[in-house]
Length: 290
Ligand SMILES: Nc1nc2c([nH]c(=O)n2[C@H]2C[C@H](O)[C@@H](COP(=O)(O)OP(=O)(O)OP(=O)(O)O)O2)c(=O)[nH]1
Image (cartoon, rainbow, N blue to C red; front, side, top):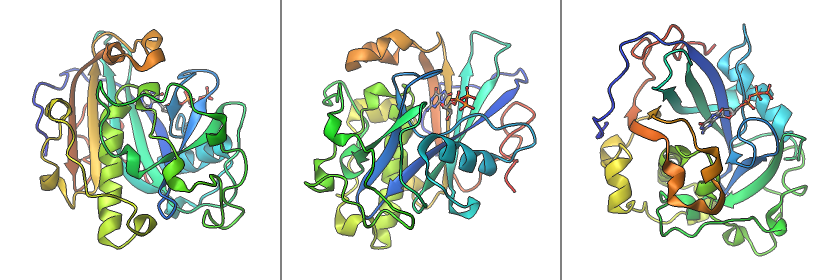
């Protein structure tokens, strides 16, 4: 259920440009893998793994391909767990397409996360990253080299055998939300809470490593489009529609200052049973799964 109504869809038909974004989760180890982008668009930010969907490629095939190219992790298509869609729109520019970014998690894979010339892999604590960051949230300005995950995790067959951080998963840092794309601070904590609470119900997630679902601070909850989380229990997918009013301020990322929110305008986060088809503007919407 959406609770932010400030957003209204543009009456114009806009093209959608499709991307994928995959977040590997080691639930038993209470860990989330993100890549630090070394070059190109998004350089200097942490993000999941993904890229453009090529012509004549399905979204899931693209997700599998990009994850492998950028992280070395290999998954079969059925292991991709579809979680939701980001719709990122630059309202000031009628000609630029809406970015339609399909978000997946994976929980099993083959291979070991490796650094590529595009991304370096970093593990973060899942249970410590469930709360939306606020001004007072400590910022991980730089990630200590000890958290650089260059080897160690899974040899073919899984992550259980890995011992990448001798002090255990609780030594891992909080996700550095202020070094990510700004809208990630809204949807990613929601997604992690969603995964954690559903896994907890099944007795999973690191053998009770996940603490009870935290309430986001009031100021954040009131503005992130999803105040009423209990009403969304059981819904499978999220849709996060964001209208950027000034473009992304790439220069504001460093230091985690609040000014990094600059550019993000009205936004709305819905949890839904099914991803709708044709409800959003654009010719291609959500329907390129096999
Ligand atoms: N969370 C979030 N993710 C974004 C935003 N913009 C954006 O491109 N991404 C994601 C989508 C993709 O996963 C990734 C960008 O992919 P990319 O430009 O590297 O695509 P690619 O690998 O096909 O590109 P290339 O190497 O061929 O140049 O970043 C954003 O504003 N927020």
